[in-house]
Figure (spheres, rainbow, N blue to C red):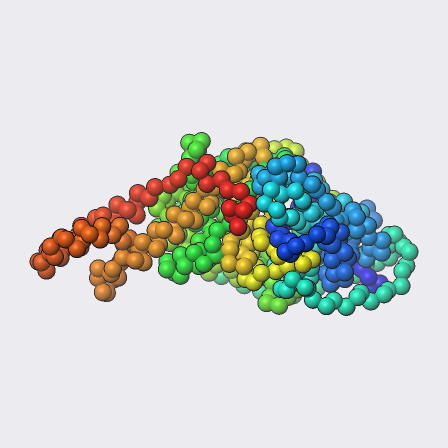
Length: 543
């Protein structure tokens, strides 16, 4: 088999097979860039030259798809010897005034169009004309080539930790074959050998997978009725997010402080991912309440789980999926976070081994037309509008670098993710951490969620609300040394009145403590929330 052929694993290929005009399967990011002081050059030309000098560092830039004869097997990656850089790196001049809202709408429009499969599956768009004075870069790549972790590795190829960048060795020259596509015999031989390899790999993984499934099934249950109840409760309630989607997109992005989220996680014994889920649950709860459509039952979230080992920089998909309760039926933010943390622990303990045991590459002859046909039927029949959803929303939290990065000499100020809504889950919320901030990217079918900016505003408000509650709780004195209950600290009295007031006797202390508990309990359940429209911010204000 020629060394320039690289097989997609079955998970990579699935993102190609299920793709349709209504459901593009690419991911992206929007990055705000601050130009160097006194910069007078043409940043688009500088960006294009920068990418050209780094393309050999990441295989995604130079490989394209080669389809198998009659689509009897998954396609393969081959080297593209004639890359049109002017096609892949583009320029957009925003019309005046060049607002953040205009940029959000333009990104939503770009994200709705499919990538050209005859070329390497990536596009960069440089935005100019922003009223903040910044430039922006929208980077789109197909999910068949990278997952969240792989995208971070890809960013490492084109981004630097210093404005002047790294010294990059030029790509080693390779002899040209002048062959646009491979021959049928060459592709058929590659497909046969790959199918045999997949069968061997799958057979080796079966014992581990069987043991994991056995452990789940053998867990003790009270009765068969409880098992049926568990299956029934596992189905998510139907919401406005659980419909068949169109190719129209709405996108909104917001930024919050990473340190605050970590503080909340540490103070409550939760994880950062739990905090993100709780914030999103509160925001969706309020968004659905605007239409009097909040489900009484807790919503369910699909959470991607990375199977990538530390240091693995390969450009493929190594991810699985877990379902868990979002505790959206709990009104109190802190109690909701505790419930999510508990559900997360149980889900990981129950499903973790089985999820990690699922092979990412398995034999499935005829996969392209079998999976594509099933996906097309599901979308066009609008079954997602009537079939009970297994999850209401997909939420992903991707860890990123905590240091400032630079692209072509410009400082990267943001790392807003743009992900994928699918039939049955018209809303996707992806969170990327970078340089001390959490960047929320909310992408949805525009017909299902036309007011996505309101939902994004609720995300910011729920984050701030949770931070305030935890800070108040941590500031309160402990009432019982053994139990150490956490209560909020009421507002401090006016200093002058406090000095003039006579000091109460020790006999009055129990009454003061009782009143403190009553007042702080009221504070925890009665936190004012600003209207959504009052927190619209421009780019400069967010930075």
